[in-house]
Length: 166
Image 1 (tube, rainbow, N blue to C red):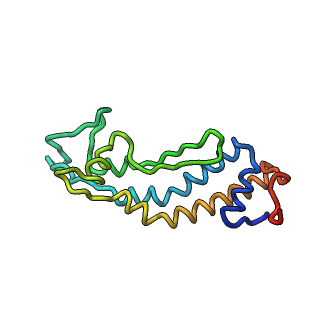
Image 2 (tube, helix red, strand yellow; image 1 turned 60 degrees about the vertical axis):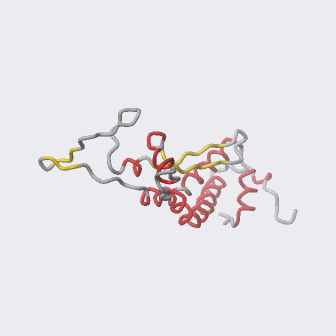
Image 3 (cartoon, rainbow, N blue to C red; image 1 turned 180 degrees about the horizontal axis):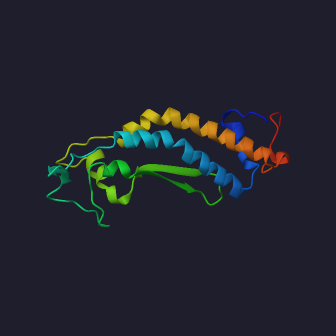
């Protein structure tokens, strides 16, 4: 098993794979790499005050529902922080976006960015910036692992991998 190091070698091995297999592998590595950022964002997400207690049970006299009819309770933003990946048509590049699902749009629009009346209270961008080194290291590590596994199972055509001397 050959150990790979650096993005240049990883890129060479990735281009030796078919676009479908390489794209799947790239997406898997990128999604796995974003886990530290996702966890940090969920930890930093704002949580509202709990509803009133009535007879020992939570009671909200003014329940707020989303457009889908889901009740917006404390921690709704935390539960709706998500990541989404898109793969290019040729399978050579991937984007992973970190944000909130559409029902929790207010967390970005009103809390993160603020308005003219509400001061901004950033939580998503600082959480991402704190975890960027972990994301980079994890992406490199996961991509190496997946490429080595693909090489063992014969998914990489070694004749297409250029030598270092060329």
